Amino acid sequence: MTDKRLVLTTCSSIEEARDIAQALVNRQLAACVNIVPQIESVYRWQGEVETAAECLLVIKTTVEALDRLRAALSELHSYELPEQIEIAIEDGSEAYLKWIGESVGGF
Image 1: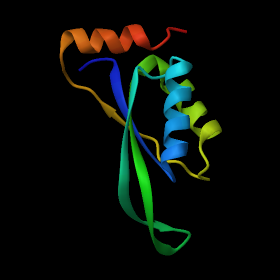
Image 2: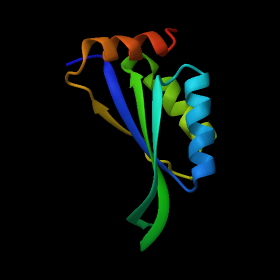
Image 3: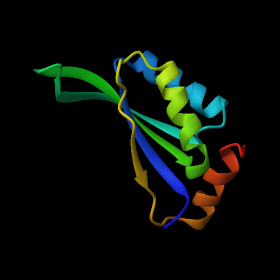
């Protein structure tokens, strides 16, 4: 197990996805954010089943930055309840994992 994490969130538009991705990388809360456009989400919201076109963000970060990243997502996101799913990175390229750590600001 490493101290690196993937965080998943969805956005309502490609513009919002790009804005959030740029802000997270600029604030050194993420080393990289992949934007996966044109996904379709089916979910339950306020008792109703909804369908929406969204973009998925795959955010690479560290355990140390998670609290600040969560706060930034809540600040930047247009959704009342933005998805914030965190996945532990068990293993990976040593050089890539080191780059994530160096790219995410230590606070």
